[in-house]
Image (tube, rainbow, N blue to C red; front, side, top):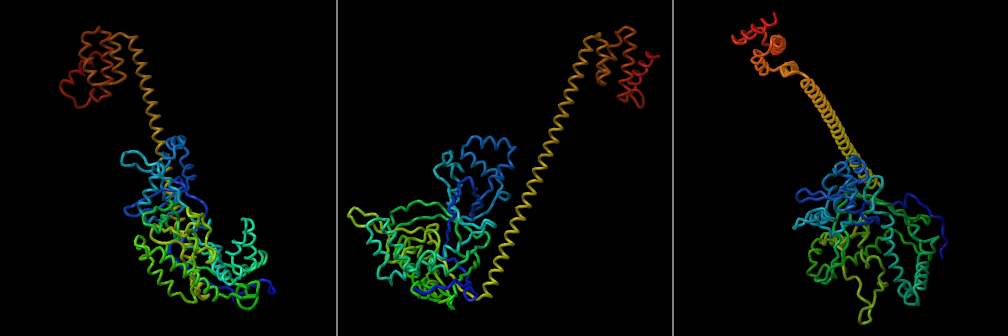
Length: 525
């Protein structure tokens, strides 16, 4: 075994690259978005999934009894419909991802009864779960972890070394009589290739995480398709992906340069510098790309996939020493994650032979395979300029969204405050009206009680004093001629006061009114 020196990380071991996404990449976070964690918004032929801050929305509506009543039912369908109708995604959306397949958007919206069906009822046959992608917790940007890239680089190296080894991993498995022995033999073989865990050769390679541009996320249908056109694939959840053309992504490799040349040094002293890493990876993945195309996408019922991959195939066939082909993330398929001489151990069929493996492909929206990317190695100047530009765009986008959400929230708070003010004003008016009505009722009751205690003539005069009325005054004027002298005098006083209040005691008057005033004044003399 070669004498190992301490790892040395120097500038010459720093190898920058630009990552290009060729086909949708799905790096799962292990979490699943339930239908209560998002709303679907559709505008014409475009649709999007908005991840929501449900807790904030519920807190904002804590005093809304209609909301609380729905929550109290525990009926997921009713809660989902309420969110679909009432939640403002401009304020409560954490992120927004386009959905290219609008039929998928409609299915997700119908989940748990989000929409009525043709019979007028609500659909409940769809779960609506969506597999979430890995995101940066600071700005919610999707990213490809360095561990995924390093794992994708390691597999071709393992495949190369396994072919050179007199005892392959497959032979080690065949020699095993039980699973525990199989694991030990494989571990022993791997240790011969790369060394012990404490001094593993792949420690010489470090790979940075690669962050996608802000909002570079879409939701696609993960559709399994078989080589047999009439066979239905296993249903899979929709997932969040990084789409091709989402924008520039930058990262770097770091190779141990203790020996002078940046490389991976194996236990037997063999060095694997970057050009050899590129060559092994391109040979491994290039072969599998073409084999997958010929095995699957040349079939008549999958010919549309072959058409969609023409430009990607041209890129793969034109690979050079400065570009590295990898397949990363979920749905990379068994051929790209296992060594050539170690096919999966499938269960035995009816004839006693192992079942075939690799008979299906999982495709994004049924049209494109997952996970193909290119690493374009570049100069330090290009890397620094590109990274600075990408980070500036990301910061600007995050700031713009933050300010936009803040503006929307402030408008919503202002509307809510205005609504509270208007509600309080309405409540105050209603209270004042009620108090006035109560006071008027009290006065009417008092008046009725007083009138009941008086003679009919006095009651009439009291009524006129409380509510001066021309019509009532004319009635009393006529009636008083039949009253006794004392009541006539009292009537004259009441009529004078009433007509003064109504502006009919003095000033411009009709001849009839002048005569009435003169007669009343005579009674008061």
